[in-house]
Image (tube, rainbow, N blue to C red; front, side, top):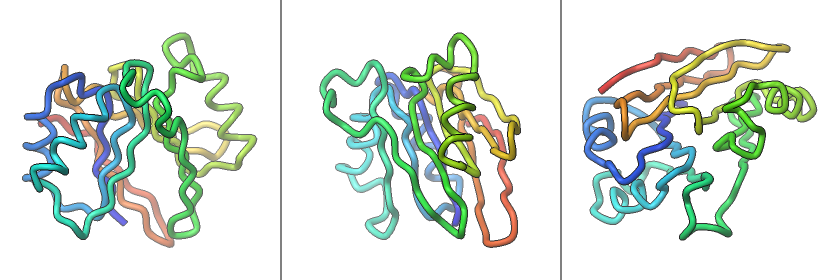
Length: 156
């Protein structure tokens, strides 16, 4: 399954549109801070109906105050945590997020909030931060199969 992963669009949708148009994917993930941006793209049918969209609220998603804060997916025998990251203090370090990933036995952790693209492995978990699609045009393309996990850190 191929994931197109965005975070921190902050009212700027053109970079997401460009990434959507130039990549093949099975689903889109928006990890918060202006999730209404991805909803606009859905509304204007820039995402095919057969594509799944996962949305997590971030610390700036005031309109979506009651939106989902974390999602745990089980795909291709991999446990994937989707979170914005602010509830784990990721701007000040990754210890709390790493602890939680370890607690739930996550294979992959997708998070945002810092606005900086990042990828690292810790305690058998892969951590991916797409950075800010709105400010710097960065995103991640993740491919998960039964046998492997591949990703690309990309810029529009």
